[in-house]
Length: 79
View 1: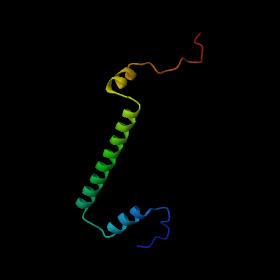
View 2: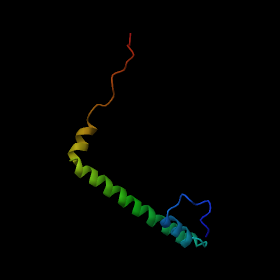
View 3: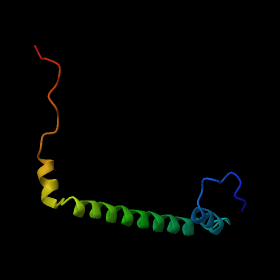
View 4: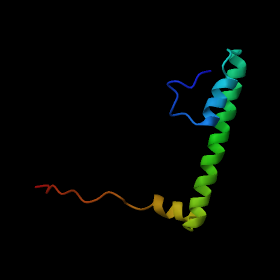
């Protein structure tokens, strides 16, 4: 596979394209896609958990925040 027109892709992305160059059964493609989504979901969860730990966010924090009123007062005066 030539890299022309693919200059914005990194080496790992190019490698994945090379691996998936030949058509495959739909069932196999769906399984690969599901695995990729599962991996990305796991990474997203880990990132959120790290952020929560860094900022001392707990379940109680979310519970408290869910009960707050975040709407700002209207700047329009109601007659």
